[in-house]
Length: 280
Image 1 (cartoon, one colour):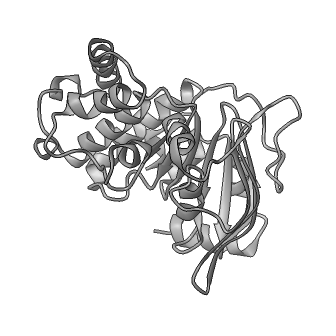
Image 2: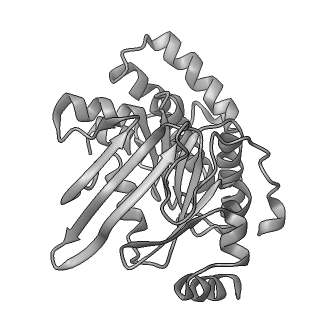
């Protein structure tokens, strides 16, 4: 995997984040208020894997500073949607824009776009032969052209922010899964992204390590980072999200505020999903 690809790439424990989002969701259509510019805009997006139609005419607007959590059963298309936003998965038709600019198809322009869109995956994708500090500084030096001293200072600051600065000289294999995922978040932030994408960031972690990663994500939400988060963590969705987008069978079924979704879902599909998830 190339450097550019890697660099692109219980409820009571959560308190409401107390942020003031730039806008509120309109519900249903997911269209931002007129005075809130969209950081992410998806229009009429279609995606197939062979005969499987995984994204069906997706319409989604994420205003600057919003936290949008995407929920849904396995196979609903939510991770594919997340991966299309920095073109790790190209769409078949439709349009995706980030900060008003259409996604480039390839080359330098696409690399520049990925530098603006931080992504945290299920797997950590850290370079095993490099120290934690080197993992975080590599992108700013190689892609952004920052001086090593500047990049290192920023990396230490970010590692402190995610609570693992004392691990900076270790290698990934010496860290727990939760610590490695926090390094992955710090690495993405080191690129000074305009938006952060999270694709099931806690699904590969042991249960006791989940909260340490979610705590970092909650702090980012408090600070106003534009975030699109694919997750099964209902506590995070309920407390940290400005909007919940519920997908099933490649379609956005509901797009509303967390309170409405969790207390009064409109669709039978969402009610069935919540009964299975929250019933355990």
